[in-house]
Structures are given as structure tokens and as C-alpha cells.
Length: 245
Image (cartoon, rainbow, N blue to C red; front, side, top):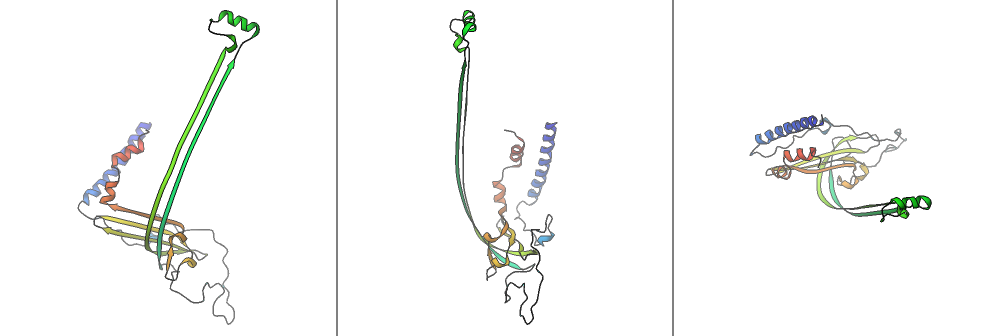
């Protein structure tokens, strides 16, 4: 039964790979197409962000006052604050992680059981000459285990991307999403940034650092001829998925 399921899975993956291969054949000699500009909230799978919110404060106006009580600034500026506004994200990622772990465990045990007295005499009378009653039963065991692991990773990314405010949360925080595609010859570089920012963290020049984005989702990749060469073939990916060894 499991073999039938595996064969069915292989056939489905192969058919999907065949469709992708046909698409690639149809685009031979052509550059990768860019994605059409569209409303992010209208894309399949888009879900509005819902976060825990404090109770809303009622808006109150004071007599002879120039501003309302819930205003966050006296003068109006041009920084992004409404749905559809654009701000610039300074993506700066410089991560380095290095871990080294080593474990070793050893255990050994030995036990002997002898027979004395009358039973020992009877045992010696019937046992071979090289067997004695003082060590009638002897057991020993040993266990050894060792492991070594290490991680050495370094990542650096410095770029800028413009993002659009797609949602304003009840507490004033802004949900942003930005996409950028650059095509050079037959390779497209994709950059996607999304997350939640505070209006107070937006600088005077309408920029914000990526480190100040909550729930940040940053994707940097590419597609095209170079990316296709770097990927394993469909057959190799199928074997990697189903082979148990």
C-alpha cells in the first residue's frame, strides 16, 4: 500500500515538473517576465493583520485649543501615515552566528555471581576443571556515545526599497508591504519586505530602518537562467524526497 502511495506521489510530482518544463520550453530565448503591479490586499492569500489592541481613548476637544487631546504632533508633516502612503525602508542585515558543541558519554559495568557452600562443592564436582564456583555467572556491559556539531553563518544585506501602507491598526501602527523587481539580462532579482511599524519610528525624511519593523518578513532572491542552473533537477529533488537513505 505504501509503495502505491509513493508511486502516485512520484507521478504527481513528475506531472507538475513536466508542466513547469513545458513552460520553460515556451520561454526559451526570452527574458523572465516581471510581475504586474497590483494591490497587495487583492492578492490570493492576503490576510489583514490582527494584533492585540488597547482600549480606544475617546477624542476630546478643549475650549480655545488648537489641537485635539489625542494628537501626536502639533505640526503636520509629510511622513507616511495613511493607507496608500509610501515610505522608504532601509534594509540593513548583518548577522553572524557561530556555535560549536561537543558531547561525550561513556558508561561501563561489570558484575560477578558465585556459588559457595554445599552448592559450590556440587557445582565444582560436575563443572569442567577450568570453571570455578566463585564466578559462576559473569556479566559486563559498556556504552559509549559522542557527538560533534557546529554552525558558522554570516549574512549581509544592504539595500533600500519603497513600501506602501496597506493597513492602519487601531493603535496607530502601520502595516507595510513593499516589492521590488529588477531584471538584468536574463535574471530577475526579487526583494520583498513586509511588517508592522510605529509612526514615531519613521524619520523626518520618510525612511525607516528594517531593525524597527515588527513581524518583519524580508525575502531576497531571484529567478531566471542563473537560478535555474543552481537548482537540482526534478529527478534529483524527487529522489531526495522519497529515498529513506
